[in-house]
Image: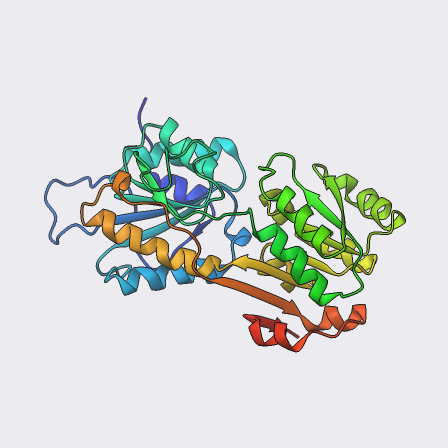
Length: 334
């Protein structure tokens, strides 16, 4: 079957260009006037709108810190599957058959699609939850394959979010904790224990259908929930506007796993610094381009964390943002 050039898929997909760069297909001419620049692809399973632009900007900064300037010393493209599995498979096949040097992604599904397509290029995880549990690497210390990068640990984060929510809403007694059953339940027990130590009861609810969100919140409030937290999930991310709307409607102080929720009106978010992870992922790209094998690059962990607060939401809920949290906040949205 005749292979379509990758540029055709770029035209069919939503493409975010970090800087002007040629198409990522194999060169048609044997001779080239200038030395070939290494080619890097960021493969997203969702749309460009689904990712905080600060993250890709941080990735670009990290590349520059390593002497990799898009359009000068390297070529970078971002490809988006737009939440369509067939498009993800098609993009993965085109990447596998092209002369791309390194692929960067933040999704296990993208890694699986690339491997299924026969990709032999090294893959850098800018962000991942648990690549060992997902079967992407053998161990964090020695990945032993094509995949390396950075991983989040959700064990303590859920518990830390409960503690921060208690600081923001001192009268908190029962918290609705939303859990996407398609995601790992790691961290839930730690969250229960942390809540219990603060005199807070956890009302854990599995949420898998956006149509049921309204009834979940209504039932929780009827059961005297006076706060809401959520275990990190891309499903929740896709539906964050509705979740934040319901939290505000029911006057529930809320804490989430990314800044986007706070920008939409959520009270707070506590998260590993995704921008820092994306910046550091560029260092992995640089090492791979120097010839280091992915199997020999240990999976890194978060080194920086971000606290986001929304003052307008706090005022709406009748809460005063504590001075110590304001001093720690990465950003306070007015």
